[in-house]
Image (cartoon, rainbow, N blue to C red; front, top):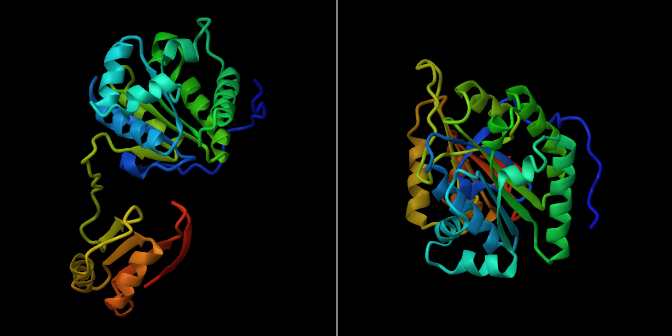
Length: 286
């Protein structure tokens, strides 16, 4: 089995601080971190993440800590009675492995070895006819193996060039029971995205009361919206105080709906249009 062996310096394009997104907003080619506040918080997010990949024809690789639940229990949680994960496991589309075997198979850690391993796994998924490889990994192994915080941060940045290939998607979770708060926070500087901890979570960032408010609404996953609902958003934007704005990210279909409702005449409303390919911005406008 052959894979990409090229590796290079840490990717320079990653933002200074990761953008927070719900797990459903992850796209092929994304590299994200997940802040886990307790031992069970990751399961609902991991289940949604994994099942989305299986539905899209990707190969799923769930990398659990040895201290987590057993393989049978893990599969039952991922399946949730649907039969999807169980069928994927039988066919080889889904693998459940342990992080010690993946990251420190001989008791030592090598970032170059991990680069080659995930390159090979990606090529294996392609050879099996999968649309891509989706990895969800518990990073608790680092503390147990004596890997320093600096080494973990360096490793995550070192892996970033792999994600030039849009067939690879990864979500790495760091538990606050295993790592100090400062490391969990620092992971946002080496991951372009941070997944929200809960499926129904919102992130609110405090701002200076004197600064204008800027609202942002991502509707890129929607291809249909009732006219009344769209009209309410236009009215909301129109009633915003001078200087405040509402930015709506949407596809061409919803763009047409908003423009038919007079969005061009609302100064406070900004439409950010994305192409049918997720994540591809094709233009902006009022």
